[in-house]
Length: 110
Image (cartoon, rainbow, N blue to C red; front, top):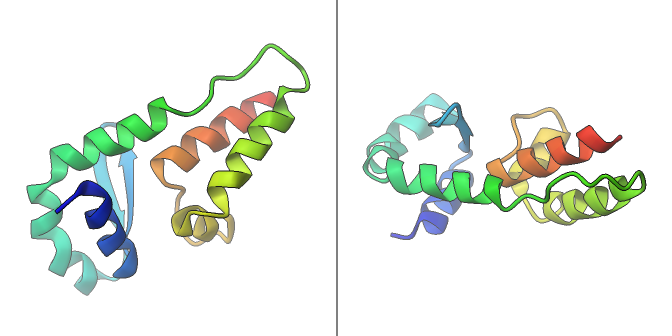
């Protein structure tokens, strides 16, 4: 199973996965988390690498004062394609690793 497929399976089960302080955290219904936990533990290192890579690919803040527009566009392009970030925008959880990095870059510019 690929890491992306595992993340999709978790999202389909209503579980939000996040990288926090180098560890994978999941939120969701306890029964869904319990069902998927053995598989998540089995692929823990791959999940950590995937979320770390997503965060590393986020754009760096620019010295340009108008750069917030570019960062806003990058964040919005990701946000509207990501169920986890959409839910976070509705205050129903946290952003995914990539979304959190994009959001932080955007917030640092405004």
